[in-house]
Length: 213
Image 1 (cartoon, rainbow, N blue to C red):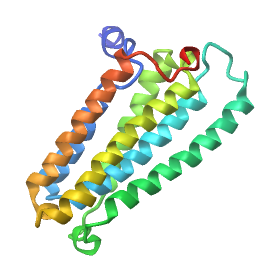
Image 2 (cartoon, rainbow, N blue to C red; image 1 turned 180 degrees about the horizontal axis):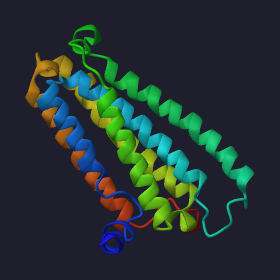
Image 3 (cartoon, one colour; image 1 turned 90 degrees about the vertical axis):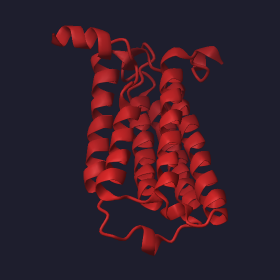
């Protein structure tokens, strides 16, 4: 039974195909059970983007590209530090793009606690990292630049999405930040973006691999 699951749901996929659905359940659960508003869901998106970058860095560190772990280790560590600084820049842009137009004192109130949702997301990303990177051997042939660039392009698209909502739509549509339909729309669009990039990672050609450049 376990072998069948591994062969059909784990081994064929280099990335966790179920991650978009896990993120969707976390955000929808926050809306339905905790009455989370747009800013509170955006806060979850901030944390998830940080997780995406952190696990991309881990994947890049162990991306062996058909070599041993110690081959080009110092080069990979140097590139990892540079990629980490770029990731910090992405996080700063995430906050800058989404903080305008939202009343944080009001919207982050009501005793909203992000720890349970964040715990689920950390466990989900950790499971995907172990199952779909190490257990199925993806790390052996993974490419450093491919792992980083796929995630960073994904993050850039999410940043553009958040910017449209928080810097353009919210100031122009009164009450959007408090309307549940606006929050659900943001979650739905993010889910579609996540599913799209999930399929591109699995079926699309690796344009960012050094071997194809």
